[in-house]
Length: 417
Image 1 (tube, rainbow, N blue to C red):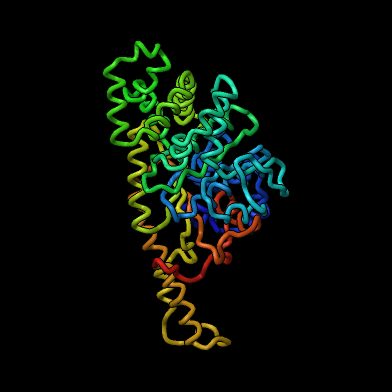
Image 2 (cartoon, rainbow, N blue to C red):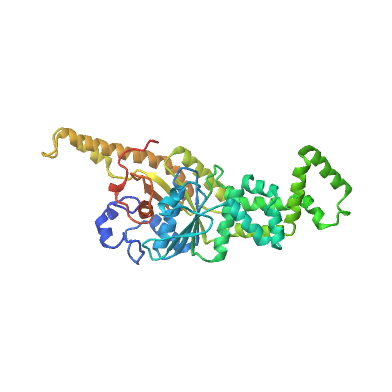
């Protein structure tokens, strides 16, 4: 069996030979993967050459699981890795064998030479921590945290989750606790929200309305013009005095902190554009997810970044390379005297059907594969069961970084086909 993601050829179809050479033990010793393709080599070097991996893609393609499997592989390689997820579902915590995940990194115990940590982003807690960090004193911080406008903004403001995901990434990178950070990006149809979030905050802090509302804190009330005060009175009559008072109190409490937020947003953008950051695009062999992945790749390119690897998840494996040879077997007569002819023909027909499914999937992803070239393309087989424990997550990591035994794959077409 060829390494996952490789073109299947006669030169690398000996699964037992790879196992004898140590290709299944998770290490990357010199000469260990002599039969690897350029895609395999480029993909395996990803964790050696990058400190941050950002998992991108639409919802429902297994992005969270792939991100966790990448972090797990980092731990296998001896790195201190951390996966940051924004998915509120319990499946990642279950897969990692944890009761729950919080906003602080939690260590996952396992049989690997490095360390594996995980956390689930809590946007509100992350924003609160930022306020405490940049406030001049505890009184200023509490004034903001208790403000009703602040509470509404942090809970409902569009883009807060995406921005906080990048803030958490920056925080972990600055702490220097981990040498591999894997970020599972927010499940948003607009897959670039997380990239644009730092810029949106910077534009907001520089907006004339924000600057206007800060005026009472930057000058005496006498300097705060009569016209400006009249404008606030007018807004109060329309929106309600209580809302306006909350807004003014919030911005007054925020005074002096905007520069810290602006600087931090700039550093987040630099971090995303750094060579040590890799973008792994995750898709599935379906027309809708492939189209969205292609759109994302275009937007990433426009932002001056690139797709460093494409992972196509839940692909039917190649069980037989030469379909013509299979079809030639369906001839009158019984090839095996111990097997009824009808049973043999049913097996061959089922194998041909699986080959056709794989061919359709390859045709579906062909344009996307060409679009992200020369990024390596890794195909993760469709498994019989969803990932619900560390053992299942390890199987996904095996499929991503090692050699996958087709006997472990699902042997029937998925509902989408």
